[in-house]
Image 1 (cartoon, rainbow, N blue to C red):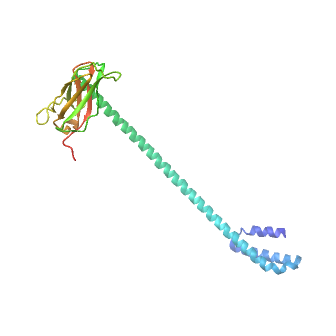
Image 2: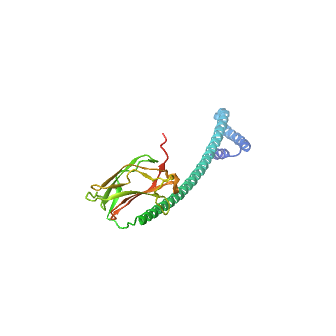
Image 3: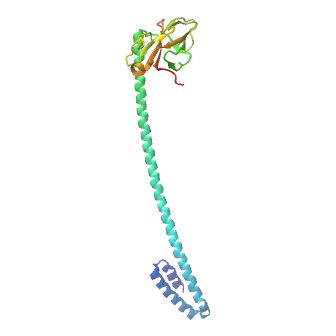
Length: 255
């Protein structure tokens, strides 16, 4: 009896048609065995046959369901691996792009810094000042500049420690230059008149100077690079001039 049940268990894994034939044969054998050995249980044989078929059908369906679930899991895993791979590739390209842009930006900034240093050296050469123990600094940033519109500039004379030299007095003048590699002095506007309006020379008092009601009489777009370089030049050669680059002067303020 044990051997027959073992054969029955194995036959669950056969293909459908062959499995049904073998199962039928096995059930017949079981019926005969039970009828001969245990005639008192032969009444429930048909019921047992039906239960075995139902159990076998349930196991088949469960096996199919498990196979389907396994296939879906494998498919989802493949999709996950593919999406992860694509995401890593996109991230790699983004990092490479950012790195390339950073190097380009650094190169441009480096070139601009180099150009500004060259311009400053050229202006210093024009002014003929090379050694200082003090320097001029702005008290506040310049406002947005427009042609013929008045503005003011406040500067201080400071030592190497950044302290205002209250005992230092000097005449300070405004000078305007083109924003070329080798700057040129700008004295006239396109109409042949002075590029400045107002008093462009002031004397410092207690280490400070204040330029009031001055203006630039032309737009920077009429000149090379469409920008100016503004220099504040002290009469004392031991005071470093203040050089302000990238000065834009617009035609008028748009409301």
